[in-house]
Image (tube, rainbow over all chains, first blue to last red; front, side):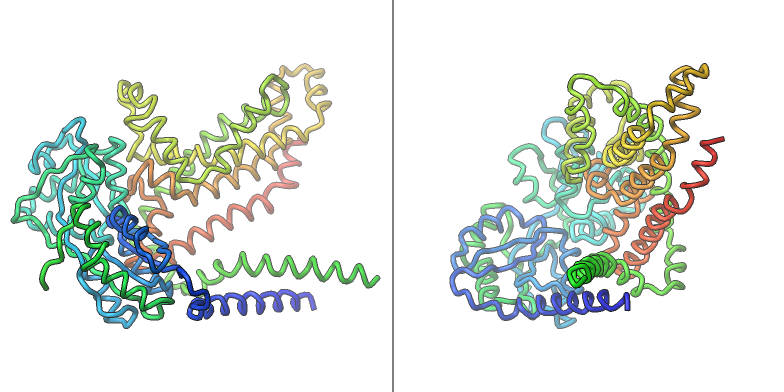
Amino acid sequence: MRLAPAAGALALLVAATGCGGKDTGASHSHRERPDLTVAAASSLQMPLAAYGQQFASARVRYSFAGSDQLAAQIERGVRPDVFASANTKLPDLLFAKGLVSKPVAFAANRLVVAVPARWAAVKAVRDLERADVTIAIGSAAVPIGAYTRQVLGRLPARRRARILANVRSEEPDVNGVVGKLMQGAVDAGFTYATDVSATRGALKQIPLPESLQPIVAYSAAVTRGAAHPALARAFIRGLLTGTGRRYLLSAGFLPPLAR
Amino acid sequence: MIGRAWFRALLGATLALALAFLALPIVAIFTHTAPGELMDRLGDPVATDALRLSLETTSIAMAVIVMLGTPAAYFLATRSFGGRALVVTLVELPLVLPPAVAGIGLLAAVGPHGIVGGALRATHIQLVLQTAGVVVALVFVAAPFYLRQAQASFEAIDPSLSEAARSLGSSEAGAFARVIVPVASPGLAAGLALAWGRALGEFGATLMFAGSFRGVTQTVPLAIYDRFATDFPAALALSAILVAVSAGLLLAIKVVPGEAWIRRAAR
């Protein structure tokens, strides 16, 4: 007897959430300016926010986070319209699982050592090995952390070990690394070149030698089951040829590498 | 009669709805993880490092909160002074601040570029990206839970109790230690459990202020977030452990104190 209302309420709740899930597919009804949801890598925040404002056919709603977090959300059933990742691996993986359309590479970037402009305990890549230097990197799961480990992997084991011994934080996305640098919590961090230019002089970059530079390619895909697949495709086209590309280039991103 | 039945059904229905909504995610965490797998995951060194660090940092934070918070709450409960409302509001403020604001605030105050950052550097105290920084973040977000509850517990004590103790020759400090605190202890324990639970779950302020590094600053919630993308079962298992520990804490204050505390206090 006592349990009856509880069971009823539970059924109601399940029914309500079930409906909510289906609704998103059928919400084309209001014609002007639908909401386009874009899940994008943290490092894309500046150019994509500007591009979204110019995207006339939809109101763009962004979810910026580490690409790995966004990909994991998609695997768990979250359905943004577009997934824009700081690598090609995660979109390819989701494509193989049938969760997104075929990904297209739309930009490239470079990995750098970022240091505070006001004081420079680190002046060259070699300085990262000094015992008194502190470093922030991305966690192994997020693209910036994976690229960083690629770079370190190309160094002799002894140099790599000295640098890793200086790591004080493994951040969930590149914004975390930039934040720790801006606060003076660490002397250096591995970021993208575009992150340094976005700080307008607060940070400066030390370029990596060509032999250490990894291939940093961004790719995007339309999510299977996206509420607005046509708009999502238009959004990605704009990243390749239109307004989006212009914003990407002016933020310092490079054109996509020929695959 | 009909009216009463209708109202009772409404109350029951709202409670059932609230229970279903609150319990569903917790039930889901446990149905995804078999108990055997849960124990296996405990053998994962990253998980054990995170658990050990969480227990250490929250224990230290609770010790600090109780030692400083208990007399401070007694002061707030028993004295009237100008600006008391303002002081109480300041004490309560961290309760409603988003963790991101707490993180920014701590950086702006005691970070390397913070207003007292220079003074700290001069004394070679470093908090950012250190285990000590985790404790600082935990104390900041969790202390109000204890202070509020402790203040309410002291306010609920009949003032004649303290007067009686003093008329029997106790100093105010003696009455506080031997009479007031024991009588208030069920309430203090409840506040402590809430503060502890909040500290165990702290994420945002810790990440912003102390960063995330295995064994040094990566507490259980940070390890869960780190695992979410790459190893969902491991993230679930750690979540299950955190739920179990927190539930244990909340349950303990409902079962353990009560009579046992009162009896000891009355002795």
